[in-house]
Length: 152
Image 1 (spheres, rainbow, N blue to C red):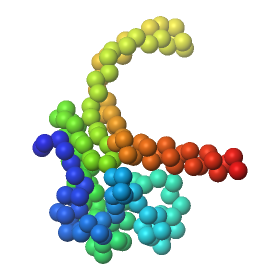
Image 2 (image 1 turned 30 degrees about the vertical axis):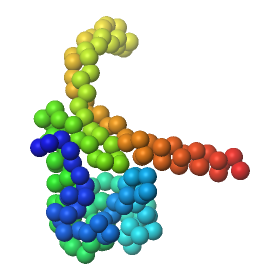
Image 3 (image 1 turned 90 degrees about the horizontal axis):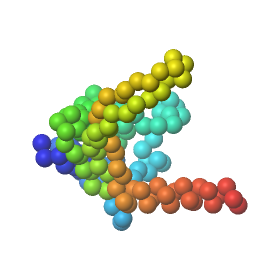
Image 4 (image 1 turned 90 degrees about the vertical axis):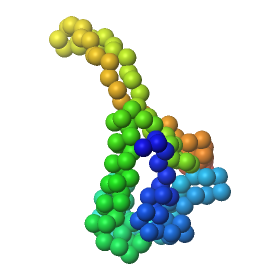
């Protein structure tokens, strides 16, 4: 694996054309979604405050007229590819979205006040996500527009 994952390729493998893909790229290269088009009629999905793999698979299935099982396999294959690359110590870059990598955290000494002694936390690895500049800027613009609404 090269370390670069492209969601457009995943959609092409699934037989989804660019205009029908859930993720659409805006003029500044940010992957966005239009809530009015993608929410299903299921009340449980409308109230959900976050998107998980099951929800994402439901969106794919609803939008592209194929089974939820096939959509779940597509979503699982994308996340499996990302996970596999990270487990091998690689880096995954998704254009317009961000990059995933593995960061090595140094060993550190901690103090447990309940037990009254120090302990050594060994060196370990942790996944890291760095958003793309366009996504970061759009998120900041979104949060600034929300704060402006509260002031009015």
